[in-house]
Length: 154
Image (cartoon, rainbow, N blue to C red; front, side):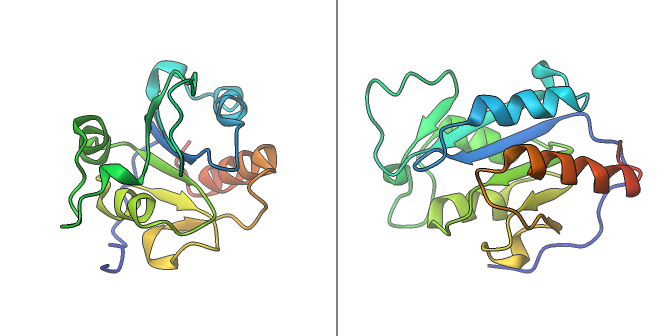
């Protein structure tokens, strides 16, 4: 894993990539609702969700995947996930607090301009860390936008 480049774009946040581990956190819709409440348009939010065990009746409207999409060689065997990685989001929110190889690889390889996550994840992956519990999604998003405003990104 390489250190994150610190040359962050000065562009305003318009597009958001949301990477969520739904293994223990099932409130993805509420995170999206908070993002919308802070002015991010739903059409500008692209969400993918990870689960340790992917059930057939997961019932999610998002691209869902599990660790089986990670090959032994370290490559990701999913067009949708690779498209997500290659999309140049203004902001990537890595909404997971337990280090899992595939999630960390997606965050590390993402072409997003600005990355934010939790302190329990390798600090080299994100430009910004928000210290809160994963279930405090409203505090997470509120703090995120408070600092994005200070950084002139909104």
